[in-house]
Length: 286
Image (cartoon, rainbow, N blue to C red; front, side):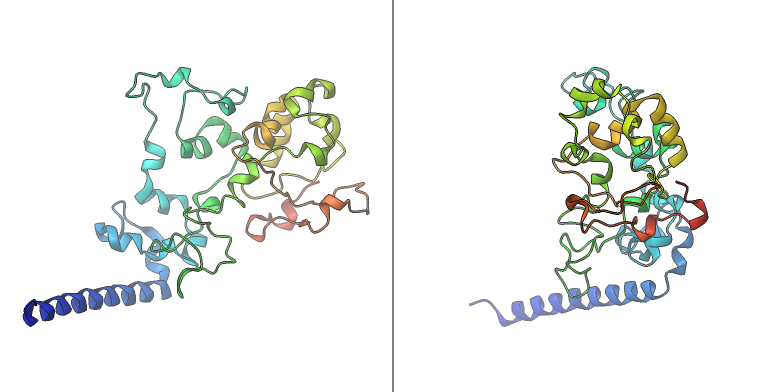
């Protein structure tokens, strides 16, 4: 049998670690109660302490709801600074290894990283108004599943899904879901039937569902103008880059001349965008 002194030492170590964790948790909770100190994080994070930076209130609600890109990029600037290798370790040239969804006419320039494609490329700046918090709404770094502890977000949350730091169903799927050709009444997928419609989405949508793109993370007027010149602008975000096999159930905003009868497929579908993405009433245009 081991010496009783060994057991006492182990118990003392466990008690010490537990006490340290409790003190750190108390400190974090006090900071969350007063998140003002996160207004301007230094470039090196919270006192250059990775653990304290991880648990900084800016990563939790409500502070993250008002976090700016500058605050996020103070510690996460590598998402825009890092670039893809010109040649992989196996000798594959990035310029000649584009994926199928990168072969649309709107995918221009060199191969680039995920975040740069969404934030800093010419197309992103022209058509989108994405922020870090458009997708990232914060989650407890201790948890990889919602509702797994008394202090984590509930199972009903839309903040993030299992083992993901964003909720792909309410963010990524908006622009990377399948085109719902059944609901739209197309005879076949767009890339097969587009010539029947003059390769223009506006053949139908000049009069149908005209109240669109009126959200804070998109530049509606720029999208409409670009879509008139090139249907790939529309198709790119409505099936042309479908990472998922399902389509996104877009809110069915009313438009001028819309029939009062609701089709079966639209019953129960939202009629307005999420509150956090809604434009001020004066900014909405049909």
